[in-house]
Amino acid sequence: MPQTKILLDESDIPSHWYNVVADMPNKPAPPLGPDGKPVGPEALAAIFPMALIEQEVSGERWIPIPEAVREAYRIYRPSPLFRAHRLEAALGTPARIYYKYEGVSPAGSHKVNTSIAQAWYNAQAGVKRLATETGAGQWGSSLALAGQMFGIEVRVYMVKVSYDQKPFRRSMMQTWGAEVLASPTNLTESGRKILAQDPNSPGSLGIAISEAVEEAASRPDTNYALGSVLNHVCHHQTIIGLEAKKQFEKVGEYPDMVFACCGGGSNFAGAAFPFLADKAAGKQVRLVAAEPTSCPTLTRGHYAYDFGDAVGLTPMMLMYTLGHDFVPPGIHAGGLRYHGDSPLVSQLYKEGLIEAVAVPQLATFEAGVTFARAEGIIPAPESCHAIRACLDEALRCKQTGEPKVLFFNLSGHGHFDMASYDAYFAGKLEDYAYPEHEIEAALHRLPKVAA
Ligand SMILES: *Cc1c(COP(=O)(O)O)cnc(C)c1O
Image 1 (cartoon, rainbow, N blue to C red):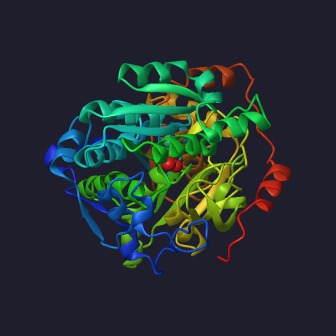
Image 2 (cartoon, helix red, strand yellow):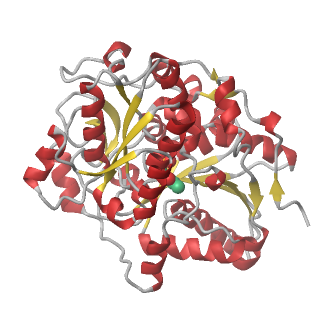
């Protein structure tokens, strides 16, 4: 039987991140300030270190990974690529299914790939504190870990619904020395504004971002770190796809299709962009982002300039959006409850270079359980969206007899999400209807700028 676990040596950890901008047919549109004019790098300097701002606007194809960051990556990288023999057999599909497992990081997801880099660049710039938001808790725990590694204090605004659903994520962040607050708080102007409108607000990523950005902008010792969406975050995550390509080469395979779940877009970017480089060079490969039907940013949103946060403190970015003040239903894949999407992912989708599908909550858990029973690993609810999309394709292959090579990114494990699995087994999970009216109302409140 062909290999199950395809491993690389530590020395195979890539020396550079890949920047997809170099291979995009059209250059990305600039972010805009409150006056509707492009914001220059200097406007971001209050909350980001210059090295990350340079990466944010860079058009260079390759960005060197600092030696200290590669050194920290060695704790868990290279991550394994698995051939899912047992899953293939369980499905009875002729497709060959591969998955890259990012749950091997200490915090349990791909987010550590960028938290390590961001904490290191901030430490180099002499920054002492980082403020950030977290949805399901994966980003907060990833940054808490990285802050601890490089001697930076971390304060995390955690979306209230997750704070209540996932108390152990909070303990994890505290173990790594971070301070965790349930957002909206009454400590920031932004939080107070939301609470005045709705004292029982479940919070959202957009609201928590407002709080963290406000704090970072108002304290000279504090910077801000974002776990997805921005270009530099997407670049850092390409370590996933770059390693995967080496692993595929080792077994003489190449994927026909690449799947990843899509919240802010960074793990999708990380898994898919290095393959997009080949697509730009003429190779046939389909890249599919999987999002929840309850928060269908790419498949049902508008391509427009919008704020990255709920209150409107960030520059406006040209992206697919459901409206910055849209609060998605409280699905268990908290990491996918974001109103917008990476501008890079959005533009590539707009230009038809990547695809997107929306999948309902129950079907994602069904796929996650099928996967866990076949392969052993219990996937994060977010990752279950990628698994669902991949399984659907594998089942189509069963119909047609096509032996396609399917690859998905298993962005994290679900060990802190067992309450969600419990709810699924107890029949308490629901498929939220597409929240058409709320989205329509939120889209009416998009900032008025000419795209
Ligand atoms: C945060 C998270 C996601 C979604 O975020 P992206 O920015 O879209 O990558 C997906 N999977 C896991 C396990 C996560 O923690």
